[in-house]
Length: 260
Image (tube, rainbow, N blue to C red):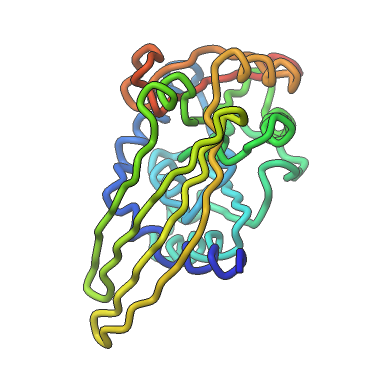
C-alpha cells in the first residue's frame, strides 16, 4: 500500500503544489548562498522531489544533483529535465537515494534540503543520520541549508483540518488534511484523503496517505548538528529572513562544515 501511495502522490505532486512559489524560494536560497559564500558551483539536494527547485537553481548556473527516496519522484524529475533547455538540463542530475544513508564519494559546495524534508526525519537518530549525510558530502567551509517546522510556532498555533481544491484540464482534486498531534514525540501525523475526479470520464479515485512530521526546536537542532560535526551559522524565518518567533511555522537553518 505504501508503495502505491507514493506512486500516486508523485503523479499528482506538481498539481497539488502548483501554487507553491518555487521561484521565490530558489531566489531565497540563492541569496543565502551569495550572502555567505562566493564562487559556488555545485549543489547536492537531499529530497529533490520532482526537481523544480533544482531546475530553478540550475538556471542560476549551479550544477545540481538531486536525490529522492521515491523512485517515482526521481522519474518525474527526469521527465521534466528532458523539457528544459540544454544548457540547464546539462547542469542537472537525479538519482534515487535516502537522505539518511546516501553516500556518493563526491563533495559539494552546498547541500540543501527543502520543503520540510528534515521534518520527515521523525527521530533524533534519523535526523543525525541525515546531517551526517550532509557533512559527508560538503567541502571544507561548505554550507548546508534546510527548512523545517518550528516547534514553538506549531505549539502556539496548532495545526487544523485543511481542505485544498485544485484542478487542471484533466482532473479536479480535493485534498483533506486532518492532523493528529503527539506532543510527547514532537510529531504531527497528517492524514490525507485525496479525491481525484477524471474530467473526461467522471470517475473518482480516492487515495489515503499519512505523513509523519516532526517539529523541531533550535536547541535540539544545535545539539544534533554538533554530534554530526556541523555548526549553526544562523536560524531565520523561511523566505522573510526574520528572527524566529512564536509565529514562525517555517524555519530555515544555515549550517557550515568547518572541518576539512
